[in-house]
Image 1 (cartoon, helix red, strand yellow):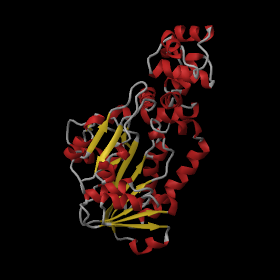
Image 2 (cartoon, rainbow, N blue to C red):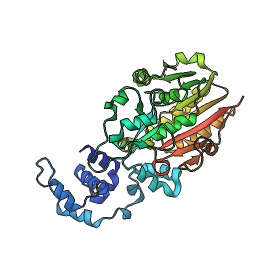
Image 3 (tube, rainbow, N blue to C red):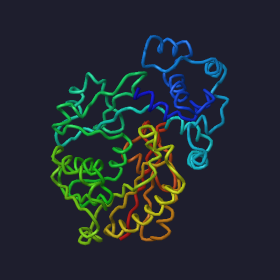
Image 4 (cartoon, rainbow, N blue to C red):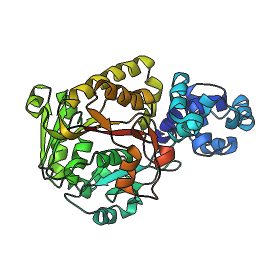
Amino acid sequence: VGNIVYDALRRKRSAAWLLDAGTPRALGFGALALEWGMDAAAIDAALDGDRFAPAPLDATERAALSSRNLADAPPAVRADCPDWCAPLAEEAFGADWVDELKALAARPPLDLRVNTLAATPRRVLAELEEANAAPAGMLDEAIRIPAIEGGGRHPNVQAEPAFRKGWFEVQDLGSQIAAALAGAQGGMQVLDYCAGAGGKTLAMAAAMDNRGQIFAHDAEKQRLAPIFERLRRAGARNVQAIAGQAGLSPLSGRMDLVLVDAPCTGSGTWRRRPDAKWRLTERQLDVRLAEQSAILDAAAGHVRPGGRLVYVTCSIFPAENARQIEAFLARNPDFAATDPQALWRARFGEGTPAPRIAGGGIVMTPATTETDGFFTAVLERRG
């Protein structure tokens, strides 16, 4: 049932078009047709004899399933997105925008990051062998459990002893790559300006091998609350949590690296949070844009001359990504963008999935890099 609900949310528009109705019943049956590969006969067979099942398909529903071809649907329907988001996606991806958003409407894999402070990838893979875990590629510490099919379900990896011992964290590969591109190294002074629950903080602590100092900051205490248990479990000892602005004053102009994992629309995570796609409004986008601009300007003051400011979102919209960086650089001429292609090649070499490049940043998506949608730009403060 959970799979049907999530599939119906991911494929809401195409399912409604296929059944020519937007009712919950139509969305459910449309999801079965689109994601489970079931025709009318297979759906009827699945319903037969189940006293909790909905009524069988009626003649109108059968006719719609047999006569409609999704290839004939309007672009925004095939892309499974709200109409107002279509121009934003086209701005981001050009002629490929429908295929990019179709990939954001598919079932996602389950990605894990091995905590190298406590375990090795080989050890974690052995522990999760029955879950079909395998190397995710790109990063040695990244592990992937494939997307589920049909009525399957992902294993509850957080119930595994290895998780409780801090050997791994659940983290999308794109998020892991964004943290890796930040370039945290042992001995650095690092500020995670919007740390939240601490996913990227933990990744950087492991990359630094507990050497140096990370200040994990968030404006709201409740968002930062989960980080303490996660730090304890991971054995991350070089992290100091700071809630609110008062504790940041001593850090002004001193940080080697400031990471801004900015609040955003989350459009890059629609595979995992499909309900957010339909709740998002243009007004919410405008609010996020103002927040991002203010946060970037505030965070920049903590970067030392010669240090780096890294801007990350889990959004695909250029207004939150490339245009934010362009506007920030126009306001702050003492910062310059690092060549994103050179940054990618230096970190991952040749032969890896090539991301899109936009506005001085790297754009990752399910269609190009097999990750959630992420934007990462690395800026340097001139001495």
